[in-house]
Length: 361
Image (cartoon, rainbow, N blue to C red; front, side, top):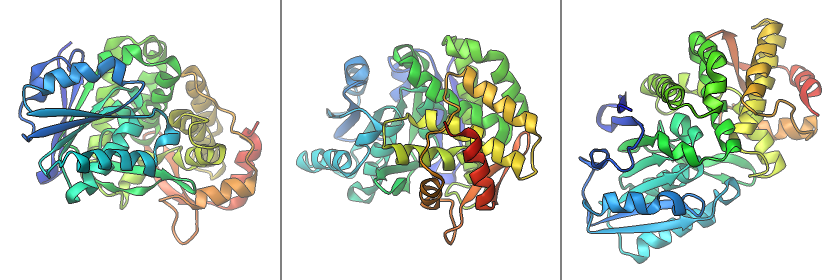
């Protein structure tokens, strides 16, 4: 498969996303990166047995020393302890500010490695090597880095861009089906917020995506990255437009935090959250009722939950107020205003209560 390149235009922080099969083993993927005495691969105990040595063997041609930090797998480990494990290694090995970090894994690894890169010696270069669909279409792109806190997801972090993203579609071959479905949630979201035709394409090709058809996956990753590149290029630090990328996430983050990190995968919570946000869009008078049914169908076909857990109205509201989009304690939701267009809206708690009553199991 030919290499697809999607540029992220951010002046001196610009970089390319490379998409295709066989990129991990292609020497061209690693040419032209910052040079240093050492490189450090950060990964987890699920990904390391699969791809660590393949990446290390490629990097050894460019760096005098290639270390690895292997963290525990799972959202529940996206916290201070894992971040400190990365920093402990960097300090113990006397890594300097030219050291290049490589994030080999899914969104959790990408977020934590990026945050470590942002804060170690006030900033060292890092490369995203996403191995899950969710990280290839969303979290590896755009420079959002963070760890979780018991009171809120991704509330401690920094905007810090990678120098390159290498999305090897072959790594999706080893992805558990549940993780593949979770990644499809982030693919689906791009349709209603920015590209109505893409939503139709997803509906027509969801079975091929679920079957890991490489051609379908390549288009899904490419189009998702193009949309995110367009948004991030206009609003790198989420002062306005970039917030639309959080469609379904206000409900989704509340589900993740309320149940306990790792109980639901991030993409599962976002998939369910999109159904709730679609319903809220309809109840707010922005979208017709059949849009809610359409979103529910596509989320179900992707193998994702559409019934939210019963946390209780007050708990949902409490969790959603601890959200980066909230202002002055008021919850703000990304709602769909027309197919392919989204915006930020504050709504009455009574409408939120109606949505939760309709969709909590």
